[in-house]
Image (cartoon, rainbow, N blue to C red; front, side, top):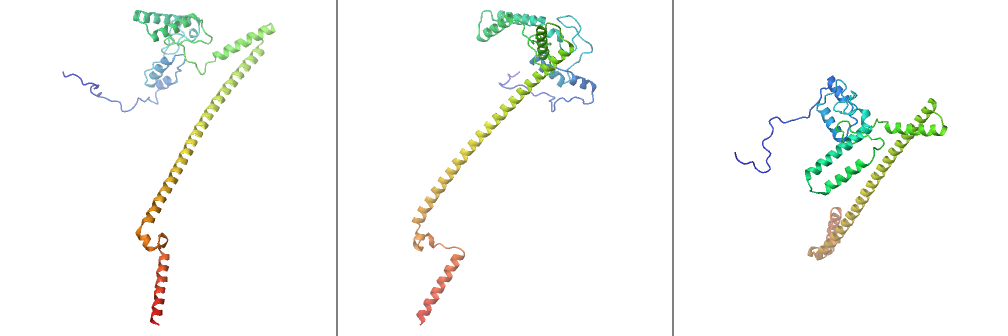
Amino acid sequence: MPPKKKGSSGRKPAHQNTFAFRHNPKSKLTEKILASPNVGCCRRCHDKIEWRKQYRKYKPLTQPSKCNLCQLKKVVAAYHTICTNCATSDKAWEKMQSLVKESRDKLTDSQEGVTSNSADGLHVENKGCEEQSRPDGFKLCAVCCKEKALPDDNDTSEMDQEIEVQKRKMEEKLGRPLKLREQKAIERKVEKTIEREKQRAKEERRRLREEATVNNNDGQSRVSKYSQDDESEENLSDASFEDEIHTEDDEDDPFLKAIGGKEMLLTGEAYQRHLLQKKGELAGEDRIDSV
């Protein structure tokens, strides 16, 4: 068999895809797959599940599965290995720390004394993760359990924590448990505060975008103005140069010298009047000669 040429990837596949996969719009399974939420995952696991949903490789659960931490059947999302409650618990933090430690040990064993800048940086980062305690609002990826989960737009954990903090402060201040009316008032106050902060941040982002757009437009207008000025100056210089050339050529032209200059060049009606006038002068000279 002859050796394969460098850069050649073999023959083309027999069946090439001419269009992307399309779901059956009338399928109930397709509707169920597309309606399945994809939350509580890290970026990598989120993209994997989205790919499965896009090409109909996603298989929804028919019944809840067992959680690997609490050993209870609370997992209702496909491809998840832990339940939602355990994802925010101390067990999840300990599990992630143990996985980080295992990966670091494997990396150390594989290198066997070979040090590199990237490996040292990874060791330092993992060591810092092990030393610190579980941060507030931490949520582990429910699929791989190796990274922190992406923030959910509909997640109200931050709001709930703020409400609990405000309730504790109010109870300490009053020295008694809060009534239901007081609890609802605190909840409404915290919700309005968070919504106001989100609206302020949204307006700030809009203002920054508008300023960036105005600056870009000003820069483009200045560039166009300078270019137009340069073009006008070049056109004026070219026109003056051409005029100088034409004047020099007119001065050296022997025909113009013979007729008395460029002013003697007549065209159209002026030339006709000049001919009639010259003809009249010749007729008058003939009369004088005949007399």
